[in-house]
Length: 435
Image (cartoon, rainbow, N blue to C red; front, side, top):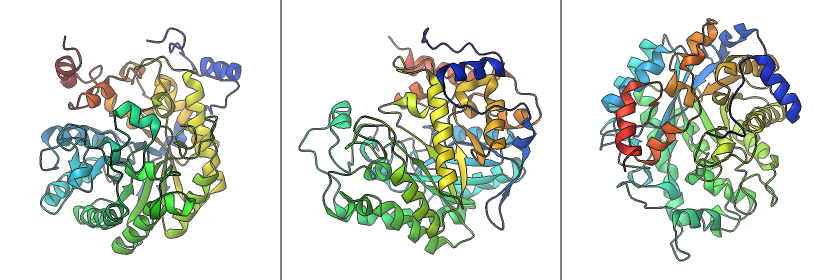
């Protein structure tokens, strides 16, 4: 626990005064009725409220990539929790792109398993929309539970952390060409399974995300803005063509890696944020037909304090976590303002614990975002949405940003909240407290 940045806020005024002292803007409102505001995504999909469950990997899929009983338990809890949008976790489009043998992977032989789960989610959630996140883990691929990186280019910062040698092969243009068809096939299967849409995952430095910063790569997928964004743009185009305009096409994108140029997207050499290319890309994706954009920043593998502000983690955060919350809220607001025409989902609210409902209400009331998403909070408190909307949010059930769910993921163990969900405490003790 960081003593310097220990979370001590009990009231809205506590957070408001702290934000004023730091010179950051965190919108707050006591009128939480706005959380129940419906959101129309397409002519056939209207969300019952403005709250979402973010994609959170459970690392508990079956060997064939199908949902396990633990997976089904998690989504049963999410479905009953009241959120209008359930963003289904990262699901691989090919076996070599799995982050572990436990990552979900949709294919022809297990699509019926997904169809059954999606049907149950729709029934138990009273009609929540369900988006599946399609991914390739790239340099973080571990299909046999040991590193088998597929890298877009040699990134000195990440190569060092992952012990990737300088002569390690880079993914070829031909290989990247082949991925478009794999994403399209997975999207078609997702539609067949009953999902309301797909997310072409472009965040947190997985393969699609890493390509956005491939300044030093040659060929069709590196160097220029056009080349670096090619795979994402062409994949989105092809998925829309294959699945039709009534199927929701989305992306969750790190709109800035907050990793210094030339190793990070939308980041200057001094590490400061420059959203110029993110705005250009968002506009191009919108013009292709994208309807939903989920905003993230940073990467859990290099700067987790950016993408999930915390006061208790693997290292002392270099800034007050309120800076991180404000950055996520206001960068999303800037993108939304300058690239209208899509529905935007915001990130970074779980750190605020019992103040989170009021920050969510503030962001919606002041038109900073369209939907507020929660990830860690959903692990800890799957009923968060219903209780926020009903004015019954219980901070004693809240996420405390302790990072234990992430520790389970890094241990390649079933991930959940060992603090709030008794099922995961023995799993945490077995995998994370040995020795």
